[in-house]
Length: 80
Image (cartoon, rainbow, N blue to C red; front, side, top):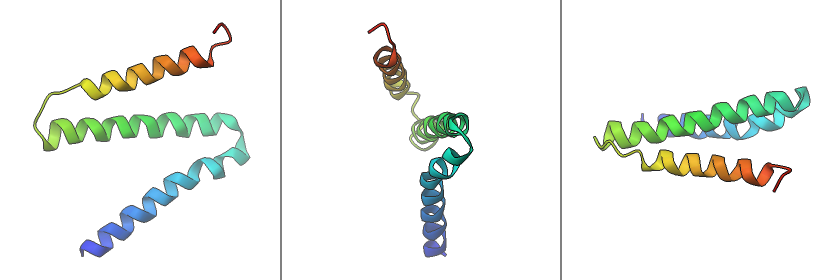
């Protein structure tokens, strides 16, 4: 039973890694949509681990997410 769950997890992870490569054939907008969706999924999983399993209300990782988004915005800006 445990091996079946691990196999399913590995197949799902590989599918999510291959997803942007498949979506690039349909245009960059779909890649951006998938990218944003996967980022929010990672943020939700992190919140679930911290609040759900550890029973802590620590939102420090959200600050790192916001800092990374801010730095990306600065570095991608043509004004920099």
